Amino acid sequence: MTIQHPDGADTGDRPLKVTVSRHDDGQVVIGAAGEIDLATAGILGDVLDGEPAPGTVAVVLNLSTVTFCSSTGLSELVKIRTRAADAGVPLRLVLDDAGALRRTLELIGMLELFTVYPDQTAALEADRD
Image 1 (tube, rainbow, N blue to C red):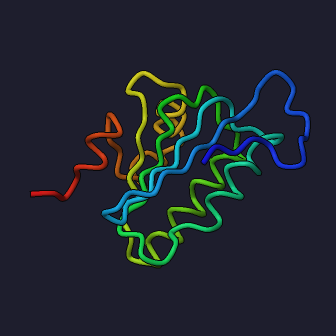
Image 2 (image 1 turned 60 degrees about the horizontal axis):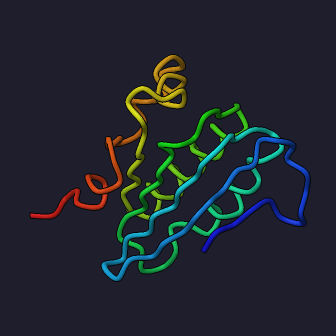
């Protein structure tokens, strides 16, 4: 499933693409690509609001291709972290080691709030023996 901005709202030249993939083992992968700002955070928020869905064993949030994230986007990350923790479901964040989002999270002291993986494969294989 690929989701663009609801209602065809104009996001300027900074579209955000969000994808959702549910795996047979109960993991869900939510990927976001582009910029998360005031105009686009609702796209991600609408998807994250339903997670973790019943039967989900882990949420992998792949933000490795996010090029910018405003405070509105950071708020969405905190919300999904709280919902996942309340449900007892691990939240696994995928970030580019050299990416702007990782650097932002480091600078504001939020990186330590998340379990971060270098790529989606590592996040999906976490906790497997």
